[in-house]
Amino acid sequence: MEGKLGMVEMENFHLKDSLEKSENELNTVNSFADQLNHEIENGRDISSGKETELLEACQKLSALQDEKVELHKTVEVVKSECDEVKVIREDREKQILKLYEENDHQKENGCLREVNRGLEAKLLKLCEEIEEAKVKRGNLES
Image (cartoon, rainbow, N blue to C red; front, side, top):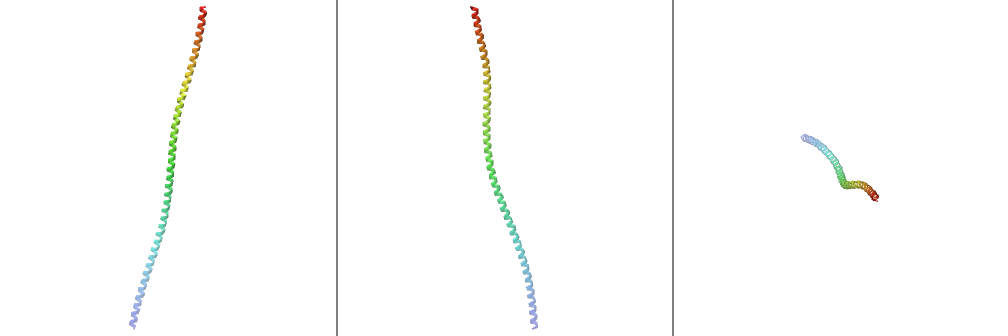
């Protein structure tokens, strides 16, 4: 019986040693699982942060695209207004040239009127001199 008892004690000792090793392995596995769970949670947090950053970047991109569309419309309006201003300016330049030409004609007409008045005055004087000469001639003949 003592031999049986020794064997049972030895078996018990091996079982306790095996149990202790199993518990240590279980603790190691649990610790490793906790570490992995912690890393997974950190990965999810990082992923969530990246999703938020991506969403914000997409919103900024969308806002920039909307702003680009508005700027393009504004540029088109400004181009159109610029074209209108060019047409108006060209028209005004033509009107100014026409007015200069008309003014030159008016000045020329004014000069011609003055020359005409001068000539009419000379003609009137010559007519008077002719009349005087006729009167003198008539007086001389009589």
